[in-house]
Amino acid sequence: MSTRFWLVIPAAGVGARMAADRPKQYLQIAGRCILEHSLHCFLDHPGLLGATVCVAVDDPFWPQLPVASDPRVRRAPGGRERADSVLAGLQALLAEGAGAEDWVLVHDAARPNLARDDLNRLLDNLADDPVGGLLAVPARDTLKRAGADGRVAQTVDRSVIWQAYTPQMFRLGALHRALTQALQAQVAITDEASAMEWVGLAPRLIEGRADNLKVTRPEDLHYLQSLWPHGH
Image 1: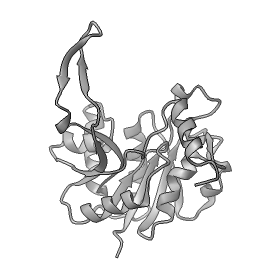
Image 2 (image 1 turned 45 degrees about the horizontal axis):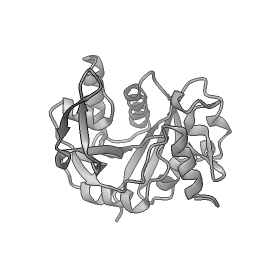
Image 3 (image 1 turned 180 degrees about the horizontal axis):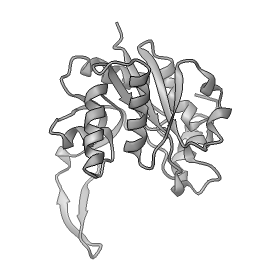
């Protein structure tokens, strides 16, 4: 039986580096916007209990999407930072009756190329894990640490370096507590795993595909458009 899970997608960012007329999650690829593609893999999964998408209060684009009327998808108010949005999404799920011991997956709004096999691998490997974990990819390139002068200060051992991807999967109550405490302490939280690390836990790394990329710059969008010329 599939592991059952809730989903939170923080989608209140503006994606300034894309220099587009709308937040990057609403840019089109193969007939649908990036956010719709990012949701698609989960909405097709039998383990999904429900999803919360955290968007800006005055977001004019979300209500126009067909997926906004899907009964499994709820809207929550996005916050100033990613962690604020995720926390709002978790609170919305708890208000809806989700349990503290339920699994919740957090996925980037602009990561539209998640493979179903990767999602299943994450769910299967972490189903009985005491902490949870995340999809990640081992560093492939030689890594350099830069000095203040813009020159190489050191070559870093890449064998112990991983790139953190999403989804990231934790127990709802534990993640809610970790994010709340980290935000109160004004700790910089860049992903959910970093909040769990801050409270002393060690999330597990689950190797995923490198093409589960996050759309950050125009060339990322062009790459996916060439990858899916006839739909996805």
